[in-house]
Image 1 (cartoon, rainbow, N blue to C red):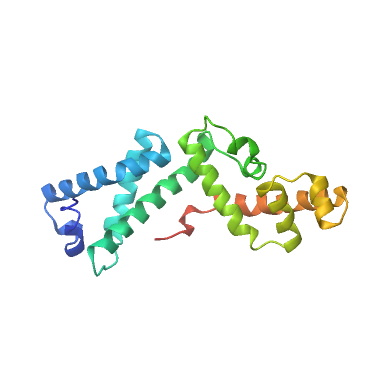
Image 2: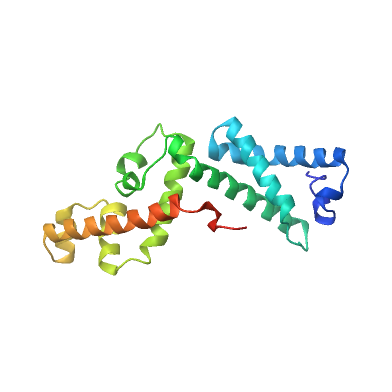
Length: 195
């Protein structure tokens, strides 16, 4: 498996003859296509992502002490390239906005959701959970009660010993804060995550 790709461990891609370069690329293409297509759900986009990821692989390859670390790195670069493509092109696709994830009941229960939408929801949920740790405790608690546990405003107010109006106000502020953070992360520079 992947016998030609192993050559990248000991040789610079530019130093190899054209035939070997083609074999290495085709082997990488076969290895990466399924995972990339699973994320982007479009054949042409998958091919573009594979080409972009391959250029990254041959352009800035760190030294590896063994083959397994090389293949793990290869998979990470490929996956991140696919996710970055999904983020860059989300304006042109059927994507999930931060609002619908925060109110995610309809997105979570959509049995007919596309794989792309499912991946985006999962990625957005991971981002929300990551950013919840940085929020004020009172905002974090309200979002968790509402989003994770599906509690009503009244139930949250009762459990926190406050009024529903205060809960609505704090939840609004917490959601606005989360939207700003997520919008900055998802619509910001995709080059932030250098590999």
